Image (cartoon, protein in one colour):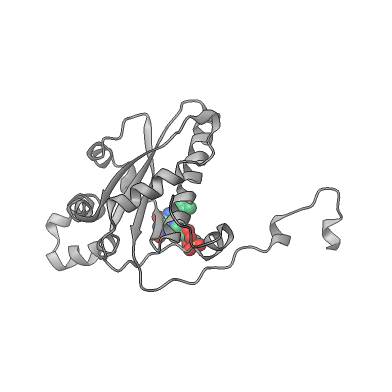
Length: 195
Ligand SMILES: Cc1cc2nc3c(=O)[nH]c(=O)nc-3n(C[C@H](O)[C@H](O)[C@H](O)COP(=O)(O)O)c2cc1C
């Protein structure tokens, strides 16, 4: 059992998406530990509608070649400096996990599976935060590129819903305020206008 430093509430409210990582590698063991615990996410019928392709530490450095291929359009025709400038945002994280869900033909099951996988992801974000590891859920267009999907071994009846970046960071961004409760809640049976 990992030692938990943050209360659940503190983890939820202090976590921020990290978009500037400092290039420090992230161990595969760290990610595996996080996933092991995060898997206790609720999911209908215990279908466990998720799987992951992970590249961490030295494997992530190797994986940068795949990212260059799919994330930098026409990289072979560009000057090396331009390519490396565009690659900067991928060189900061120390690991990545691609979250793959089944695309059930039945709409209810498909939506449930996406929801359950999203809960798994939130668990990951919070557990990583507790370990001092920043994360960001990203959805770049190349996740749907058939060649990229093939590179990751994604089957036709599956979808990559997230490129989850992991890494260490020097600065924690400020959170953007959420809508106040009055805007998003109506209390049934109350005169909400008068509140
Ligand atoms: C479904 C989903 C997709 C996201 N896709 C991206 C993305 O493609 N690029 C990005 O920079 N951030 C992405 N984010 C992260 C959001 O930008 C981030 O959660 C938001 O700015 C709120 O910041 P916070 O997580 O620090 O509270 C995504 C978040 C979610 C939930």
